[in-house]
Length: 496
Image (tube, rainbow, N blue to C red):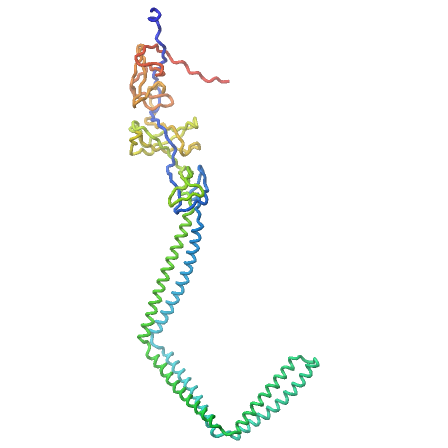
């Protein structure tokens, strides 16, 4: 019994709150996101023929990311281009028809020019003169037939026959000589052939003259007289017709413009203009169809809307995509942001413009400063959190999209505060507590604690510098009798 009564209470390490100059912070977990994030896709549907980027690639604005299979589209574009050319030809023809119709209307609408009337009269007079000359010749022929050949005519034909005989003999002699020379090889055969042709022509001339001489010696036959009289009647009719035609042509010009001609010409202009409008409409439709196919070809080329980093591939080569469906995910890394899921209990302490210190477990010792840019307007009821967005003041190489970060938002500037070790504080149900040793007894004390910092947990209420705080709450329990002792010093790394 003596041993039990004199047994010493267990030793428990305690610490005393110390005053340090620390800033008040709110700690939270964050993630690097692009300030601008988008799903990039094609404006048209089709099969992915080329994918020119991989996840993690940095792209510039306008850089080609992917191409869809556009072979069908290019075939359609060629057909549309041919349709445009056909429509252009049709329009040109329609415009020519319009110009012709308008010119005809102008001609039909104006009176005859004095020069046109004068020309018509001159043409009529010339036609009549030619017809009258022909009639006179026929009448002269009839007179000759009735009177028979004169002595003068007989003398002329006899002289012509005599000369023709002389010519024939001369050409026969020339032909005989040239043929002999050609046979001897003295001249070319073509020279002999030319002499033969001259002889034949002279013979034909003589025969015609002899026939004419024989005809002059004969009295006119009845059938010759009848034939010539018929020719005279036909010539008289021709003279009358020439007079009538000339008068009609002049009268027609004097009657211009004629109402019926103007009406017909105007109707043809309207018809031609209608055809022109239709051709113009067909050309517009063909050009629109061509532009649509060209736009679709252009839409089959997918480009980056802005510079950034490819963070995901949604559709691979060979996959089929639809209009506006995602091919890749793109983040604007030139201006990243940090998104923090802030506990709603700390919402009242955070303000836009507050600075924060950001770090990453994967890069110990590396930090970057950031500024609160936006505080979400709505709290997630299920998680009890609100999204806070911060802008980093610089973008170090280790900062990557999707990276998880530790964010300490400075809610108050550095000031003297009581600080206890982080492991001494227990937080549960939104309350922070510590274990105190008071006169050898352990008791629980609720405190107002701030977010932990490098120096420990700042305490704004509930503790004094003289309080003995259990260093590790796991070593004691409320109501327990203990012997407070100073904590063992932490071993320091030995230098070798």
